[in-house]
Image (tube, rainbow, N blue to C red):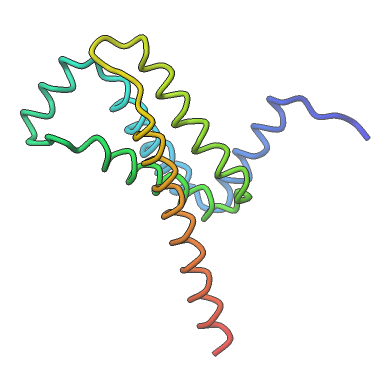
Amino acid sequence: MQKKSIPATCSAVIRRFHAKCPWRLSLLVVVTGLFVVGAMLPGALRETISKTFYLRGVDPYAHFVFCALIALLLRWSGVPMLRVVLSVLALGALIEVVQLWIPGRSTSWNDMANDAAGMALGLFLMWLSQQFMRRGRDG
C-alpha cells in the first residue's frame, strides 16, 4: 500500500468536504477566521472595538459560540467526532498560547473551558438534529 503525503491527504479532505456542500466550507472558514482574528487583537484595539460596539464582557460568550459553530459545521460535514474534538481543542489551545505574545492579552483556562463547552454544545446539537431526522424518516 502506498503512503500518502500529508498535503495530499489534507487536500483530499478539503475536496471531499467542499464537494458535499460548498457553502459549508465557506461558512467554516469565515467563522474560524472571525474567531482567530478576534482572539489575536491586541488589548488596546480590542478594548476600543468593545467600547464602540458595546461588547463589554463578550469574550467568554465568543469562545463558546464560535467553538459551537465550528464543531457543528465540522460534524455536519462528516468529519469524525474524535477529529472534531481534537481540532477544536487544538485551535483553542493554540489561540491561548499565541496570546502570550500579544500585548494586552493573556491566556485563560476559562477560555479553554468555554471552548470545550461550546464544542460540546455544537456536537450535541448535531446529534440531536440527526435524531430528529432519523425519527422523521422512520415515521
